[in-house]
Amino acid sequence: MTPLEALAVLAAGFTAGGINAIVGSGSLVTFPVLLAVGFSSVTANVSNSVGLVFGNVSAAWGYREELDGQRERAIVGGAGTAVGAIVGGVLLLTLPEGVFETVVPLLILLACVLMVLRPKPRLSHGALSHHRKIALIATGFGVGVYGGYFGAAQGVILLAALRFLIPDHLQRLNGLKNVMVGIANGVAAILFVIVAHVAWDAAALVAVGSISGAQIGARYGRRVPDEGLRWTVVTVGVIVAVVLFVK
Image (cartoon, rainbow, N blue to C red):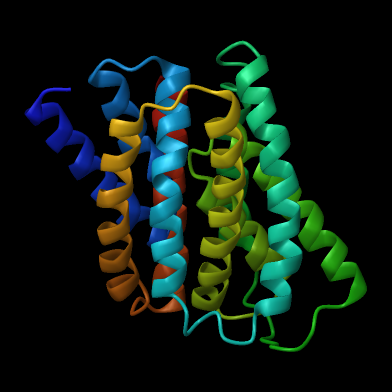
C-alpha cells in the first residue's frame, strides 16, 4: 500500500470502530476501502474481521459500566456467537462469493422492523429464565454464523434481537451486543489466522483505527437516550439495507 492508501485504511478503521460501538455496520466502511486499495474480496473480508476484533474489545471496554450485572448474559450469548462464528467462517472460506447477497438486506430490514414494532419492555435486571437462555444461545449462534460469513450490520441485527428477547435498557443491551459481536469476530479471526490469508498490514491499520474510534464512539454513544439510540439503529439499518440492495 502507498502511504495515502494506508491513511485511508486507518481512517476507515477509525470510523468503523466508532460506528460499531454505537450501532454496528462499520464493515461497510472498511470493506470497500480494502477492496479499493487492491485486496481481493475474501482477503479483504478476512483482514477486516481480524482488524475489527480489537475495536470490538475497545467498544466493550467503553461500555463496561452498562455491562455491570450482565456476566451470565455475556457468557450464554457469547457461547452461541462463538460456535456460530466458526460455522460462518467455514462457510466464507468454502462457499462461492455472494451466496447470501439477496438474503442479507432482508435480514437487516427485518431487524429494523423488530426495532420499530417492539413495544417498550418492562425492564428487568434479574437472571435469565431457562427458556430465555436457550433463545439467547440460538440467537447468538445465528448472528455468529452471519458475522463469521459476512458481518455487515451484524450489530444492528443482534441489538434488535436482544431488545426483543431481553427486557432491559437499550444502552445496556448495546454493551452486551458489543461483547457478543467481539466474541464472534474474535473466534472467526482465530480461524482465519489459522487457515486463510490475512493481509497483516491492512489488519493492523484497521485495528489501530478501530481501537481509538471505538473509544470515541462509546464515550458519546453512551449518552444517547434509549429512544434516540433505537431510531439511530433503525436509520442506519435501513441505509445499509438500501446500499446492499443497490449493490
